Image (cartoon, rainbow, N blue to C red):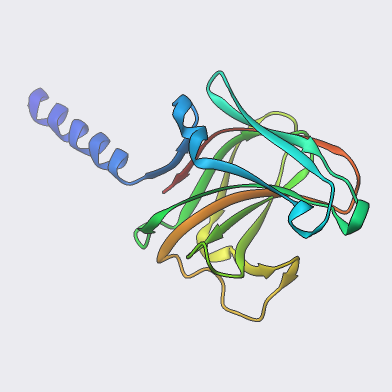
Length: 179
């Protein structure tokens, strides 16, 4: 009887582990290698940011400049398109600086629009859950008249900081997981 319940618990635990997709786990030092910075200098701005690995998390930090119509910095990771239709939530473990960031997703890295949700940080380690169906389309800061994220394919994720202020920022991320 005990063996039977033990096997059932092991099966349930294993099933729960398979019910998630790890998009980024920075306890693995090589995970940072798939990420890159995109600043407003692609449009003439002067913001600057860096990425680095520390302990079991990635640090995204920099300085936003409003010079030359700048005002944002972002990080991105793109990968071969993944079928995510069996997942409904993205879960991010992070520690921010009390500022607001954007989580961004794309069904194709070539899409003009990103699907966005704002993430409020509080200066402590947080676990943020975002319903994929709530991600809405944005292009160059403007909401588009399109349907929200359909949750079928995912080819790029990112984090963007920019709130129309010249200021420093720092965000630490441990993991990004789909459930």
